[in-house]
Length: 283
Image (cartoon, rainbow, N blue to C red; front, side):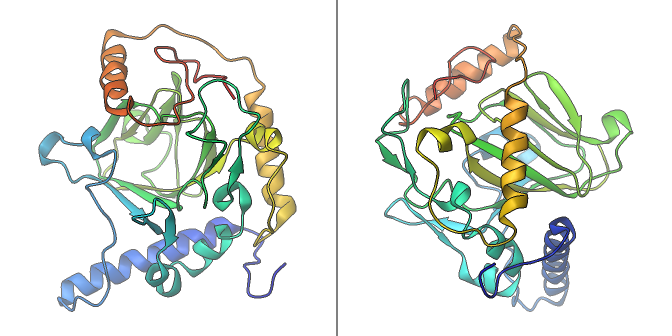
């Protein structure tokens, strides 16, 4: 492992601990009116149009990087240095997250050019959904990536609609503290928080394992335990081999999809089959 990297048997506790320390510091700083700890959560992110009810502001992002004028992401040194040292170190040298991708062999609707994601798919991001709120069905504009979530905070599981959950392609899954799961966000998916506390997850976006194979793999070294990370990707890839179940759109979902398509029609890089729930197999 490279010198100065992260080494721990269970990363969940470390990542959850960093977030909780940061959130406590923000709350204490706000009460004291010092203005010394930046509240980096932003309710005006790229998907905030899905959370406008009741005045909005209840679905927030905390991104550990910023998009530069040149179209590349840079890590937020202040957050990585002062609050999320291990969270940043864990992913900063993982090529499936931060590496460029060669797509010369891609068929179908591929991202803009043969070389994309010059510094990856974007930074790890914390998503915070307020109690009693829900995000309606929506989808990502490409299936060239997978999203993996770590539950940071959530109401207790097993309480039905009073728990927190995500529904992807018609399949619902409750999400609790410490849970880890991955999904293809080109499928329609929705989020629900029926509890009395916020639902917080850490989102990390990976290049799709099949795309990695197509490009001949990634170069670079891991910070952390390479075998464990590769095992995660292998498990994700294996899960994608299961038979996919198609279903018909409801009228509401179809209207949302058509609306979303109008918003994203000018964006290069769409790699999904429009108007289907299959998520697209044009890799």
